[in-house]
Length: 408
Ligand SMILES: Cc1cc2nc3c(=O)[nH]c(=O)nc-3n(C[C@H](O)[C@H](O)[C@H](O)COP(=O)(O)OP(=O)(O)OC[C@H]3O[C@@H](n4cnc5c(N)ncnc54)[C@H](O)[C@@H]3O)c2cc1C
Ligand code: SF4
Ligand code: SF4
Image (cartoon, rainbow, N blue to C red; front, side, top):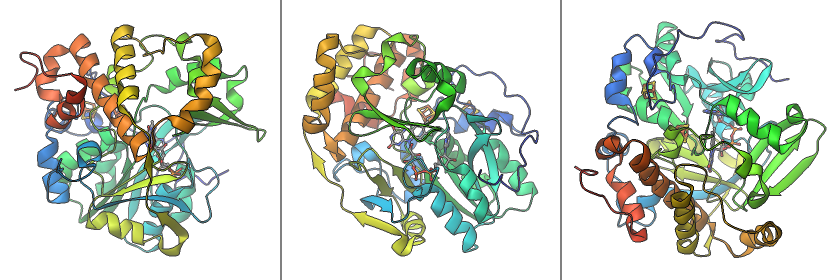
């Protein structure tokens, strides 16, 4: 069992209750001493990506540079793995290993990240970790929301001056929006992509549909080869084609509107983004600025890197997905396909579907289309402020364009 983080003992009261907001993933800001800051720091209110991209990376994304429209500003992308994958990690553990290295080398006083709730392994719980050995407790993915940024003020009170934060895009947006006033001497931001999150309760319902003994499931990942990988306490591993997942049995509101309309899949405001979508079975790193290079350098020969590949064509897949989202009218975008055809298509997709960077572009475009279609249907008044220009540019090739009042 991994050690528990030193600075946040299990069971310690975390924060007060969060005020209710209609589009909110409880990033933690509303639980801080000044919840009014949500108004200027929330991804779901009036985000200003160009301004924050300039602040963080020194420039906005440049649609003329390959892939920046899709993935945000970056210096380089790599396909990578740790030479010695860490047990309990979601992939090979690059994310938490960088956190360990920052603490080992004394580059930071603490790493703010998620661990699991004691006795409730799928429920995320924020922790301020100050000892490298305790980073092991953060390995792996939990499903759900937890107020990561609520620990920023306690961190300052504990004397943390140099901090690293590992976060998902909605957390990182608020962090960057307030970075200047937080007063840390140094801030490193390690981001992961994020999509299709939901509450831990809802996620546990999904596990119960996947297996008669959901408590025995220790790991789930939606891989880039169109299969979900499921691991069990007894060491079994199952690989299930997406098309055979029990999605049709989920309630229409399984994914909250926040995650159906999130505009930053690839965490563009992080110094480095660590995901898997463009990695063809390996991890996929987007190094965005000098600080991101510094973070990657910390791993030295521990990390094996190569250029990412790309294959296949995304347009027909994205178009089909958009049709399904429209047909589902707010519910889950299910494919209309007879049951007997599903195994065959499930077998074919990893072979003929988009792969590598093309898979990542496919997913980013699908997500952009979902944003527009779901918001238009459920909260049209939000569109003018919430949908950034890059999202419109991503969906325009599919005939999705702003209607009156939706832009400016
Ligand atoms: C809800 C969710 C959805 C994701 N969807 C995608 C996706 O569609 N495409 C993609 O390429 N990558 C996605 N990721 C990222 C991916 O799952 C891996 O976390 C990432 O590739 C890093 O792998 P690793 O082995 O380096 O991580 P590890 O070294 O195992 O570290 C994982 C890190 O994630 C943090 N974390 C775990 N759960 C949460 C949570 N609920 N909220 C915030 N932080 C958390 C941990 O604190 C830890 O720091 C998603 C992550 C989450 C949390
Ligand atoms: S800033 Fe965070 S806490 Fe505030 S409304 Fe947005 S997601 Fe919720
Ligand atoms: S999908 Fe977007 S809004 Fe939902 S948890 Fe992930 S980053 Fe936050």
